[in-house]
Image (cartoon, rainbow, N blue to C red; front, side, top):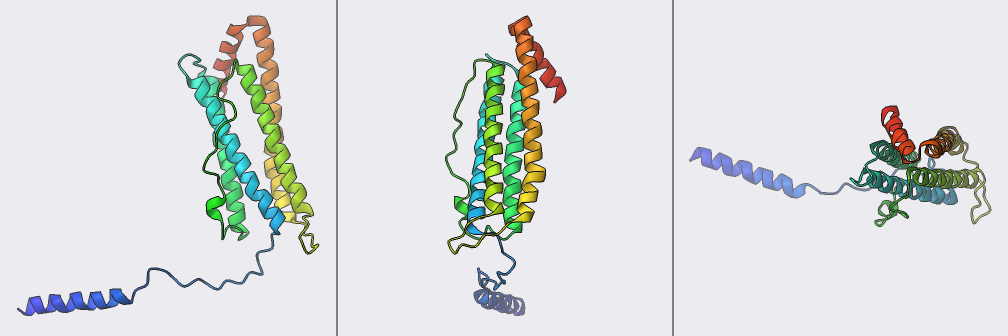
Length: 216
């Protein structure tokens, strides 16, 4: 009987303490002085995240196309799937940067559109796909340059302009460097593949695909 009474007392104590618990914490009162990115720059960064994700989806479509049994170009498929992963990583890096600067405290659910579809789903040849990839990279590069331009001298409604040196240096030194190297690599691949196909026709693409598979 004493055991039963003790158990009842324990349950009552737990129930009482549980009732006093709250499911949500009070909103912390954090000073805003450290958050200094201006609105036009933040908007451009959010748009760039979308651009990177759109590029990733397009590369996934390319990889899927060359993985088809009737196409069967594993080298091209691997190359484009890796490109899709890189673009997705770029988006994650931009999200991390905005988090570091305290600029993802609201409208996070609107950061990524729910419907992103690739513009093209099939390609006549590997050359056509590589040329589309180069155009896509040039579009992403232009978009990044647009972010840099906006963040160097953004115009606020109050007429205030803030040169975000840190973000501009980050985008220029890391993102643009990778973009330019990637574009040059694609241009070289297009040049080599066109020469091989000119000499060997379909066999040239087959040989180039094997080279891609061994290279990656």
